[in-house]
Image (cartoon, rainbow, N blue to C red; front, side, top):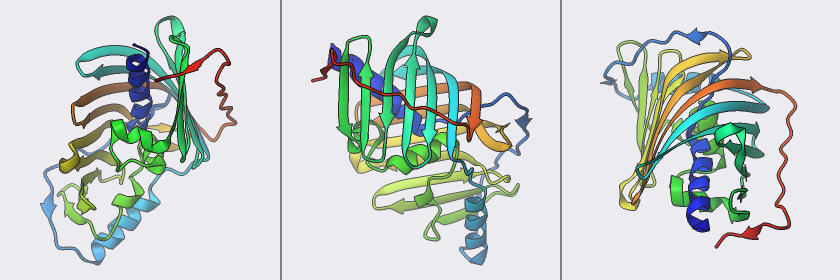
Length: 265
């Protein structure tokens, strides 16, 4: 029982790998993407990739709050995620249920992931690679951070990718990176609309769709996020609606394991 609950809480933490954020400001109008038309790779592709790279959100810290509806293997739950990020260092997540009661807290670093389950008084301490049980081996810490802010995964912005250009200015980058089939859809405004990752031999697939973009502290970021993930027999879908987002504010990342807590099996 403890292992089952803690595993579900860890899946919630893994959702942080693929979410965007929303703030208290106006929606930014975006041009919908049409079916892409293939073009030959040339200097124009390099120029487009550099333009996408330069449009990525730059930040030192981020904090956000999102109402989240989860469907984990057919079971639905409503939770609230409070997220804080220190760029390139750590991601902190507090998970609350009804009445704002915290049920779990997580701390993700480039080397490790730690989760405390307040409902069962147990904790989990694992290397970062443990997240691959839920998100696939293609996910590293920078992947988590990039998807959370709505940035492109850095490894996908490569000249080796095939570029397909839509007639409204949108582009799609596709490729195969050591068995990982990827597709990155970018709008005319150079913001990521959809990220798809698949490893057929490992039975892993992840698709993140950003359906709206808004402004937060002068930065254009995604909101209304739909996530679909599958790793072999594990399936997850999540819909997020954020009501708060801030950049570059002083943050604290409190995390400690109470003495009375025991390690999860």
